[in-house]
Length: 183
Length: 427
Ligand code: HEM
Ligand code: FES
Image (tube, rainbow over all chains, first blue to last red):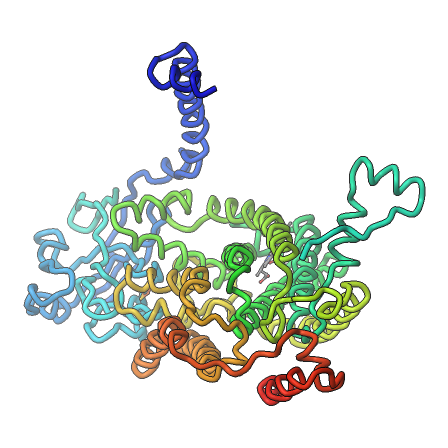
């Protein structure tokens, strides 16, 4: 018995080759099973297709008002900001912000009054309050997330609370002066 | 403790079956002749109660599925249909939703029983860890079940909890998208949660079998924490002693369960969950089910997103390491003067965290949550340190001595020890 093991350890045998080949085939087979099992969890074709660009008319949104809409199943806020709100967003020292970004970089040039951001809190995804008149807008004239108390300013930037990031700006462009296309 | 089998097949059929599948022998050895320590108190009936609750959840759940529709546009109405149109549908749903709460009541009593009597210590480490696994699976099951009625709390609970994974660096966002099957919580999410909500209880069942197997291999702990030394003197047979006591405990527990089902069926729920899910509006005050509140408080106490998630996970995982964290060789807190006080402080901390988890995350509540979170983890540090120097009280010689010693009046030494242990046993 001891003799046999000795031979085995010093020589490559046909059996070693078979072991390796079987192991390799098994690994490939396992991978071939795991890929579809995991991949089916991803967003399906229908969900992805529902992400086609949408057009939004901004004209009906009066100054100081905001609307909510859905794109790719995600909530989006479009806010027509007042002069005061824009000034507040621009007067703050950017370096002091938790997620430093200028207000200018979050809006389209020449359309500074319109702010378009995703409407889910970057903490754990609740919808911040502040779109409706009478809502609690937080301490910075923007939004307030009721779930764990995050305050966003009038540029949608996080100012205080557990949320780590600013409300992201979705991809969009102005097609006319009062119309945008999201996506 | 799993010793020699005392089963004797009586009929010809039993002998025939015993030679082929010794299932009656297995049942006899584990539920009839199985020796249990003679000094167990009512806290030991909660294992049986948990078994009953698991079966009750599976039975009511399977029946609910016969009337429930797992689709984002139909789920809410199908639950209302169960409540209004299906014969006894209201009863089945209230049994299931309150059953989940009662299941957690029982599991928390069961866990604290283990903490007090040191049931996690050698040789019961694996038994204890399997218990922690069951607890985790229960939490996953209850969370996904709560999503199924697709009310406002269902939807926003699902959103907040799945978003916890977005805190993970690099892979977080991808994991969340894969959990959702979309770009937000939606119909694909509901479908997969439904599938898993059906599956997990059966996985729990599997782990329960391992849990009981481990239990029957090492034997039950008992209020003194002294291991069985003499099976004749220290134990009684499972049937009738434990069987009857367990059934009595179960019936008492069912009274409480029935009180909630028939008189306060929505006491442990949230009114907001009777509003259909609306992805555009978050309820003003969102809180998880009561049984998650202590962990939710820990999550919110940490001002950093990833840190909060890690602390919450650690609060549960740390339990699995308890057998090696607690350095004391004495199992039962009844004989640990300092350990016992720590234990009761820990109970207060857990209840306090539960209360804080239901309060808004602002001002003084946040500060209190931070202090209590530190105390929660402090318990484990304290157990480690105190075990190194604490002087335990005298242990009884044996289980039999602890219950019979003073009555028997045997040898002088035994009487002395038993009386010495007496005041401690009363705590
Ligand atoms: C570990 C055992 C289980 C626990 C802790 C549990 C927990 C829950 C909870 C908390 C709910 C929400 C109840 C509500 O607020 O309406 C729920 C709903 C539901 N569960 Fe379970 N469940 C368990 C086992 C099962 C099983 C085995 C099935 C099916 C085979 C099932 C099927 C359902 C269905 C169809 C619903 C939706 C109807 C409703 O909301 O009442 N459950 N479950
Ligand atoms: S989800 Fe907004 S603060 Fe937590």
